[in-house]
Image (cartoon, rainbow, N blue to C red; front, side, top):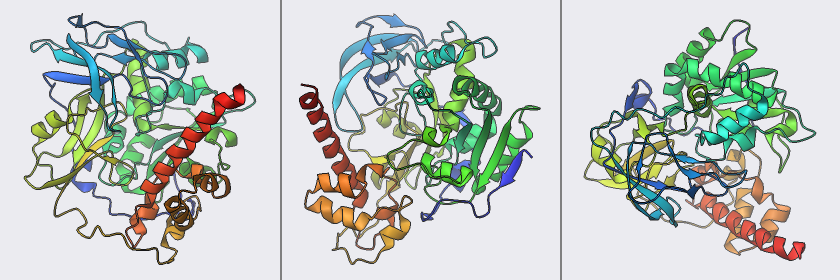
Length: 452
């Protein structure tokens, strides 16, 4: 059977924030205008940033490599437009850091034809050829994590990938990027699945889709190639159903162990937009130069789903779609797991899944933080059964080592469910994000000492 429904199979806990998807879910993907000047950070993925190989004044072609991968956990950066490299300098990023980057001025009258190199043929390519092709294409997780996809797909020695899970859940409020990709790029998705199955050795594939996207589930189910070991699973609507560990539990009925990965239970999870890019780029040997994002929110006048060049300045994006005079906050990503920006001069990068603009009226007016009342709402919401209340108290007293050692802090994937339900407005997820960064810094500092 090609399509099946899970009525009760799902993960424990979770929340049900308003979806706010209806305003863009029916809008087809449109090409976004090319900005006169694009700003490209060399650091657009988890791992080692790309190394810039172009010089100031150099003319480049759309799709040309501008920065090379450095080592295994790294990917190259390709030109999103044909144009001239105007400047090599530090550029601002969402995290607040200045990193090396490229200012690329677009040719105003160029056809913007994409450079094609050596194609990867799925019929004849080996698993290693496909993984190398994915790295050469600069593909990272387009769901927001930005982890190099070829690294994620490499099955560790001693492990076996039994099932490939394609994540089309898109449970984040406001975002409809994946929804439109499923409706409009089905052929690319199934081509991408062919590459992924060969690269991982998976024997079957399940595409997970939330029930509020039934049209996308039906569309994909009707287009599964004859005889292909692919099924579409329609999952209950619940946040954060799209987190890969939650999806594994919902679809396969098993839990990924603490500190583990889906491959530990025989699964690999890949975002549906990432899958489509693999199917779209590898047959032509092209690199990723643009991606689909949702631009929406109460403060946006021309809401929609747009195919937008990487490196497009956020300020240019807002000028093109139009915004109201009462903007309060702008998020890259959704309101639950996204990040509020402090600088409109940052750019759209590979991991940007959406731009959500909130007005003053839409933002919660009461921002006062009150003491924890021990209500237990955060415990009932946490999808991995942590104790956010206890973790929050420990974070307040800077007991970071205890948080990590005894209370599984590093298992938190910062879904924001605890902050969402907290009646005291305690920014728990922000506390945990800071705590995790401190723990990582301490662990990294200890490594040289241990190696000495």
